[in-house]
Length: 200
Length: 200
DNA sequence: GTCTATACGCAGATAGAC
DNA sequence: GTCTATCTGCGTATAGAC
Image 1: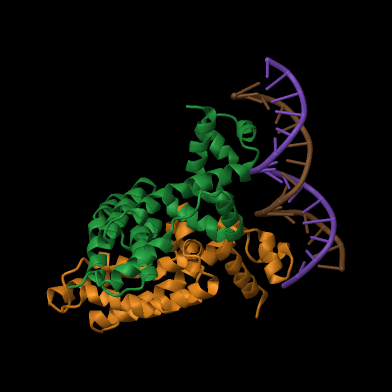
Image 2: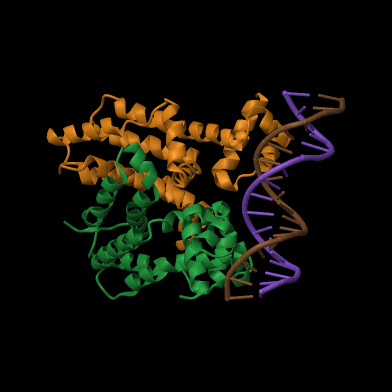
């Protein structure tokens, strides 16, 4: 494992937990187990290290989405797949969504321009919406607003992760109990969404 | 309007947008239109000013919830009311949830202890869950897991606000269009939840 | 109670030895 | 490539005049 990739791993860990303004170059150096000056040797400054981490984090999400969307399968299956892989991704990257949302909220322009000039591209929800729309036109599923459906799914999947500390506080659960709750939600969300879109 | 309350308003504005580590005492002073030293005169330091803002912000949420929960009405009505007043609160305080979630995630112990020693208390979701459970025992609504239902409602209500910049980016909407989307969701979420819990 | 001036420490960044 | 030492500026906080 190269020093550079060790730094990236460490930086990801620190930035994802503390955010840009909360993260310290020293924290990252400690995490790598090396000197602070090294970070500046490999990445010019904090901003450019952050930029790299943000883009890479964002990319964790994109291919997952796009594979699912472009797949040539019935919309109902597509939605099942979406919920399934999205939930798994969240279980593997619990800090990811709050980090992305937060940094995007802090400075939409900075981030958006970085994303767009990166070329990599965003998940193509336009296409997903089209497919949902067509399916409802064909009578394959109920008449629904595609954007609403997608946002409902994302909300149900992501929010319980994003708000984990809030929820454990409000519902007086410990970490263990709450994780159990999270891991049974995949099936539950799928049932809920199908109940909404499937013709009875 | 006293200087103290002017400071509180300004600090709320700045902390809610930038979070603790992103906020600058200078930003707050600028927002008040007064000198930075004044902040230290009224509130000893940044931490104690923040603490006050956090607690006050948290309290925006609590009574809204507790009024609804303790009300003596059928559970279905209670849920309708919940969605309605919660959505309104979000429309009036769009920065609130991300702020609370974030700061809580940063340092759960610090925040939790501040909340608990504050005495004010948390929303009583235990009671809400009991009432949902009883209603389903009586056959008034479908058999459902109370915690899941509540978290579903909260997710559907809050997430579209929390992730606003992300969603406008992914769905290529401008602020105006997205706000229109948000304001029609109250009815939509209510329909969705009722479809889940109501006996056909 | 409000201001200006200033102290102080921390965090990002650089110089330069090895 | 990695380290130690150091500079610099910024942000919190205080002292003290008015």
